[in-house]
Length: 317
Ligand code: NAP
Image (cartoon, rainbow, N blue to C red):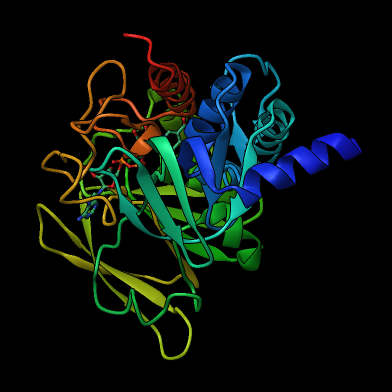
């Protein structure tokens, strides 16, 4: 960045009033920042930890257009972040503690500052759901994980279980199969929510065993995970699967706790919005996995980001 740009960025941040604040820098938030900045909105992107959200911790992305040879989640996240920065977005790494969204001026308080803006885009995403079975909570970090790409390497050459039947579970199993000796894919039904192409790829691998119609009962072990108990839905038969790692991939919970009571949520806790990503509150928009919608993918998140930023400019969508 040149000296003038650094000075401009400093002055903008010193004056904490923005045209637009974007909460969350996953694909939705980063795309919203690119579109908003290109249209001249003074934009602040607030992120708690690292840019890219769940995309950044996805091993390989093979359904995002433009990458015929796959791309790692980390690489795609980094490109989007650099593009947002290049567009002129201010970015801070601070944890948001509260939102005041009902007034004309929107306020977002973090652990360090309070920022103000005319508009806000809520793009905080979702987090992994817990199954809450005995042993799950106690063994987090001792064999229980919610992120195969983050923790998988600890189980190299080992035997692990993945719980779930959605895209995340099957993708996790495929990823772990590259370096684990054996993966048990435990799913409560015999039909998968995951894309058929992913399921077929998993079926082709010798080191993935499908444990279907099976409900996880408990994670067992003294200091670290030693096994997973499951029960067959039809026969009631219980089985102990001897593994040192259990990866839970049983869905997501939207991160809407801080905005509940202000913006309208659906029964699942996702933010309700119209085609233009507008919430029930004026100048408050939402984008990405936090939004009530039928398909949560990177492509739909970036589409939401573009739509929400354009709506924040005042265009009718
Ligand atoms: P998901 O699609 O909601 O799948 C959750 C899985 O967990 C389902 O198979 C579900 O079983 C199972 N499950 C839920 N509660 C359970 C319980 N109490 N006991 C046992 N099993 C339980 O969640 P996800 O895989 O995390 O995906 C979330 C969203 O992100 C989806 O829209 C997905 O398409 C998207 N995604 C996209 C990509 C990509 O673009 N490459 C990658 C990952 C995720 P049932 O099927 O029986 O309900």
